[in-house]
Length: 417
Image (cartoon, rainbow, N blue to C red; front, side, top):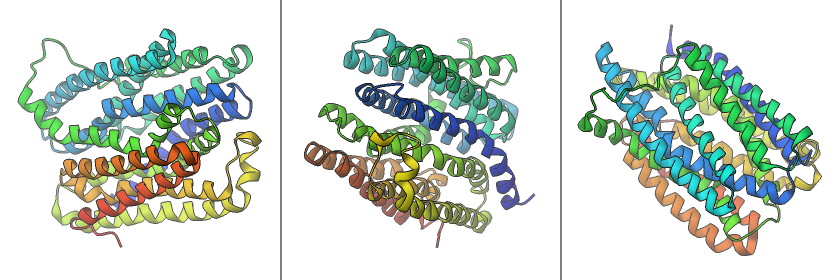
């Protein structure tokens, strides 16, 4: 089967994997905002906690997917594959523990709640564990296994939100408790079905040299994830630092809702195309196939985002008020800017594939760090006086800057017209 047919088939198969998590995300936002499961102040605290969780999660485990995709297709025998699994499991465990400790201390000292800090740390552990396995499922195209675990997590998250709404309204502690359970159950499923790829024993041999080889590709990706999160959602940390609440819920709820909805299209395409691109990149003769695949993805994404953006500009307020409530509305112009920012974020993943397939992850890191520093400085200067509006435009500018900079280098390998 050709790469194009494999891509289309896998993208269709991956679509259900994003439907349930996307629906659960929208459902959660709907109850947190429109149904006032949390009051405005608690919702702002929730956005800070989730931002901290996402950032630490990306630092601790965001590098694994790229490393698995990069190395998995390079092995010719079982022993090499086993050696890789053992070493990347060791490394993931170390990063997971360090990230958990840091996140626990951040939440504990910020909110003075031992239970919330503990729950958020557990969510981090369980998320990393699941994403680790999802990386291997994706590399091996074991889509059904990922779909089953994802469905369990999303279903239980929805159930937990409903229980909180009817019995524990206004409580962040119970909300995060049920979120912990929603991530724990799929882990039991993976163990029960013997689908777990995260395994190592103390007696397994551990080579520091081989680990450094894995990290030479993965560690820059890890730091790259951290810096990209800074210019994507780092403004939420500054909202908390400057104690800003005006329109923060409006911006965050719309952005999270938009990211969740965009995932219906963007993530199946990415899940399907990424392993194909990494495998094809091992042979220079496949360059045209890769470029065609990259163009196809960007064309599909743009073709869907543009009409949606036009609809949101004219009818966005009417539609959004029924999802998040009138008090969380955002102006049409700002909604369009947020959508354009999300599109740039998704497109950048494909613009950087040339650099990524060549193993030049340190270059990706340098560019993202520069963009993150620009974002932080601009937000630090303007957020206090201009609030959410400045953060939205700064985010758009920084995403555009990253796209231009990364494609300047990546186009020398893969050209996307």
